[in-house]
Amino acid sequence: MEVVTVPAGVVGGQQLMLQMPSGSTRQVVVPAGLKAGDKFRVAAPGSGPPVPMGKPVPPMGEPMPQPPVVGRPPVDPEVARLQAELELLRERNRHAEEEAARARAADNARIQAMEDQRRREQAEADRRVQAVHDAEAAAAAQRRRTTNRGVGVGATIGFFAMGPLGAAIGGYYGNKWAKERIEEDR
Image (tube, rainbow, N blue to C red; front, side, top):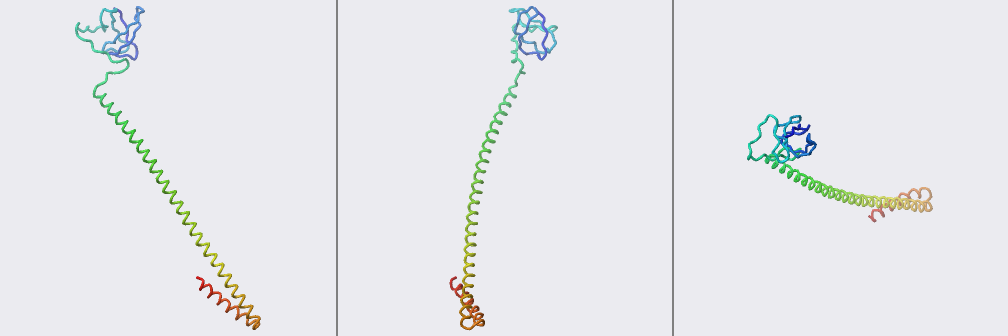
C-alpha cells in the first residue's frame, strides 16, 4: 500500500488520476469525507480500494458507492427536474419575446403605412386648397381688370360727349356697369 495526499481543490468522492510515490499513475476515488491535504492509503493494483488513514475499511462484499464525475457534485433528481423546467421556461420566454418582437415590427409597419397614407392625403388636400385659392385670386384679378376697363371706357365716352363733368359721370356709370357684368358672370 502507498500513502497519498489529497491534492488542492479535490474533495472526497471525486475520481482522479494520481502520480503514486512509487512513480506509477493510478486512477483513484478519494474516500468520502476527505479534503485537500488529508492522507489516505492506496492499495497496489488488484489488491482493493483505497483506505483513508485512521478510518475503518468498509466490509467486504458491500458495494462501493459510485463516485461522481470529477469536478461535479452529485445531482439531486429534484434539482435536475427543476433545472429542466427552468430551461423549458427560458425557451418559452425566448420564443414569446421573439413573437412579441415580430408583432411589434408588424405594428410599426402598419403605423408607418397609415402615417404615409395620411401624409399623401394631406398633401392632396393642400394641393386642392391651393388650387381653389389660385382660382379665386385669378377671378379677383379679372374683376379688377373688368372694373377698371368699365371705368376707363365710361370716362372716355363721357369726356368726349360732355367734357370733364362727362368724364366723371361716365366713369361712375362705367364702374356700375362693370360690377353688374361681374355679378351676372357669377
